[in-house]
Every structure is written in C-alpha cells, then in structure tokens.
Length: 497
Image 1: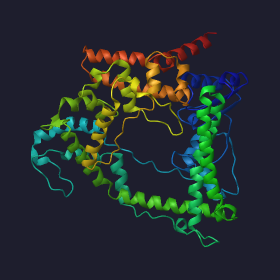
Image 2: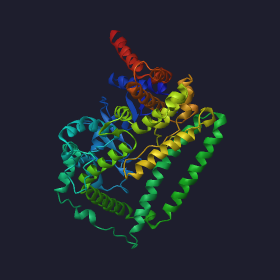
Image 3: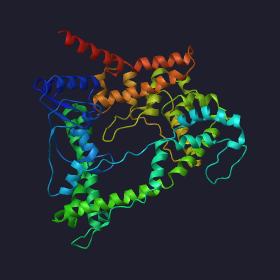
Image 4: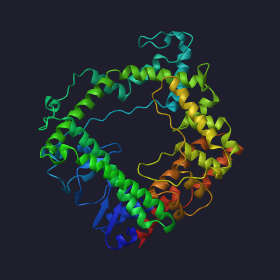
C-alpha cells in the first residue's frame, strides 16, 4: 500500500473511516484548498462532510450493508453524489435492468422509521421524574390503557407514561400505519417465470452471490495485510488467506453449478426475485407495526419489572443503584452491576481499562484481533463473563426483547498495550484494524470511564482512580481535545502565513 504522504504529494488522496481523525482533517483541508485533484473514498466522505468535488465516479450501484449485498437506496445515492456534480456510475447491463437504475437515480426517498429504544437509563429517568406526580395522585392513576389485569398495589406505570409514549414519533408512525391499508404493488407480487420450471434456483443463486461478496472483500483485505505483515506473522496470515480462498472456491463452484449461472434470463429473474422478497419484508413490517403500540407499552412494563427485581427501583423511587444507572448512556446495567460488585475498586488501573473495554467494545466485521493471553490480566475473566451471562438470562426470564451485550475481550491486547504506555504505531501487532478504528475503540473506553467518573462522588478514591485510568488512555492521537486544538492551530498558522 502506498503511504498517504506520497499520494498527497502527487495531488491524490484516499479517505475512509479507518483513517486517523487528524489525517482526515488534513485530506479535507487540502481538498478545500484545491491541492487534491483525485480522491478515492468510501461512504465515509458522504457523512458529515461538505467537500468541493466537481465529479463523482461510482464503481457500482451495489453495497454490502453488513448482512447482504443490495442496491443503493435513492437517498444513499444522493447522499454520496451530492448536488450539481457530474456523476459516472459503472453498471453491468447483464445484471442490472434499466428500471433499477432509474429508481436509484430518480426514485422517492424511503420514509424514516423511528428507532425509539426504551433503554434502561431512559426508563429510570422517566420513572424518577414522572412517578412523583403519580404518587401525589394516588394509586387510582395506575395504567388505564390496555386490557391487562391491574395490581393496585403496584405502581408500575401511570397514565403519564402512556401520554409520553403517545407523544413520540414512533407512536405517530404506528398510528399512521394502522390507518393505512397498505398492500404491495401487484407488479411486485408477480412470480418468477423460470424457463427451467425451477424458480427457487434464482433465490439460491442470489444467496450464494450475497455470501460471496463479503468474503471477496475480506480476501482483498487479507492480501493487502499479507504484503505488510512482518516475516514471523506471514505464515499465520497466509494460512487464513488460504482458508478464505478455499471457502470462496467452494461457494463459487456451488453457485456455478446451478442452471442460473449460464441462463440468459438470470438478470431478469434476479430482479423479480428481489421485488418479491422486498414485498414480503414490507408485509412482515406492516404486520409488526399493527401491534407496535401494545408491544411498546407492554415492553415498558417488563423492563420496569426487571429493574425492580434487580434493586434499581424500590418503594416507587430509584435506589442508589438506579440513580447511578440513570446517569449512564450505554451499557448501564453491566457497568452498574460490576461497579456495585466492587470490581472497579479491586482491579488496578490497567485491569479496569480492559474491563471497561470488554463492556463497551463491539468488533467490526472483517477485522481480526490477536488472541490476548488472559493470564496477563491478573484476575479471573470467566467470573465476570458468568456474571454478565446471568444478567442476560435474568432479562430473558422477564421476556424482554432488548439485546443484552456480552463482554467482548477482542480489544484487550490493544487496551493493555496502550494503557501500559505503548506507542500508537505498535498497536498494529494486535489487530489489522485501521488507525481510525483503533482510535475509535480507545475513545469508546474513555467515554464509558468519563460517564462513570461523572456519577461517582467527587473526592472519593474511586473517582480519583477512574481519572487515572482515563489519563492512561487519553494521550497522543487518542486525545480528541489535543487533536482538535492542533488542527485549529495549524489552520491559524496557515492563514497567518
């Protein structure tokens, strides 16, 4: 891979979410100043950036969304190409029909769906603020919506909760959906007409193609990794590369053996199959929408009951545990339970950083991490894992649909090295993740620790300890404030000259 410095010297740049934030700023500024004539970029440049580009070239109209290979949505296309720019797109005429291209270019934007999530912190804050008025009005105000049996000794929810939910965008959308008799377009329900009388084959062909796409992307990444891997690591990477090639070959052999592989009508059948699947997904979504009001209200009850069983709510008010959890933005139950179990007190600063990483880190698809020797931790990780597993099991007992994040130790090697003073350039020993992804992961740990520092009583030893944990992590390129000040100073110096 050619270093970014050499590319910039030639007026060429690349830009992706894996770049260090400071390098992103350099590329953006040079592009604004007209010093870059050609830039290769991912969708990262289309989010939150307004770059002066005259022409955009797309190498295709498909993208892998983490689950499957699909065509771009109209709003995704317009987000990437912007306004008033010349656009060139590479389209395979044998696999893409004119109607699909026309929809991507000129189709209506899809409606925005609410993703209201009744997180535990949200519920605790609402309970703390709204239940005061409920207690003043008395037990007669308890839950008037729905057809449930009401225990008058249990103030799980007042009508204020219902009022709050009914003012949400999610409730508004669900009511509109219920008032519509939306049905799929008849054209979308036409079956696949297979000349071989085996219409199911195109679905299998499509699934195999979708399975191949991320593997081929991973193969290219592995090949690049092999070129820059040190000699003592080449055998491991080469072995993983061979396994990936073997998997790809098996999938291609299976796909090419299907009648669809050489069929001249494959593109048309694939388009029809995709429309059928889209219609089915829409029908399923509408079916789920019909019960969303009651699911939301019922789910609220379940989560409040769970919080009561865990000791976050007692006597219709928040306990100290509930107060702590209500002030955390993410992973509030895991963090609060481990805090009250005493782990943040007993573990040393490096161990606390690793535990915080395990709580909040979510690995990226296609990224590999060097296995971390857990003997170096100095404490039994299995105990923590079982503790969190029991929390997840308790949540399932209450029938709660919210996913419960397990501990993830993939990032432990990076956090251990960085907390012990390693240079940023040394972190590539532990993962093939891009520099920007590493910074993002380390800053995630810092965000969690800062939230915890903010809720702890000031002047306590644990509060000071968490501050020291943050200091071990928040340095160099990971220190967002320093990076921002550096970028501001560089811009000021440039204008001064």
